[in-house]
Image 1 (spheres, helix red, strand yellow):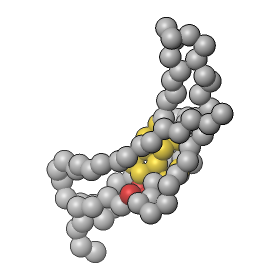
Image 2 (image 1 turned 90 degrees about the vertical axis):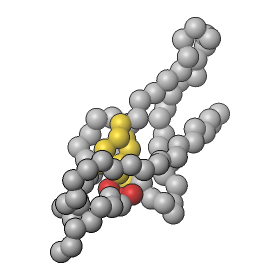
Image 3 (image 1 turned 180 degrees about the vertical axis):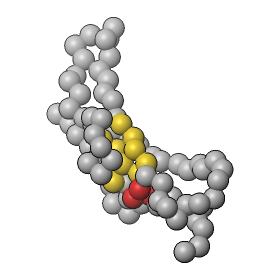
Length: 81
């Protein structure tokens, strides 16, 4: 196979806990992924609500070119009541 310098978006995952790669939500450039963070609403301005998202990436064997890789991922927070 020929060398590649592209890592497909579905090789990136996001999860709400530290799980093994493959157990998270795979990214897609055509389908939104909704990840329920279950962040409890703050009752005080001195202790803002927060949550942690874990990011994973798998570098396929076809990526054989050494160097730095860059890209953009967009996130949007949505509040539900």
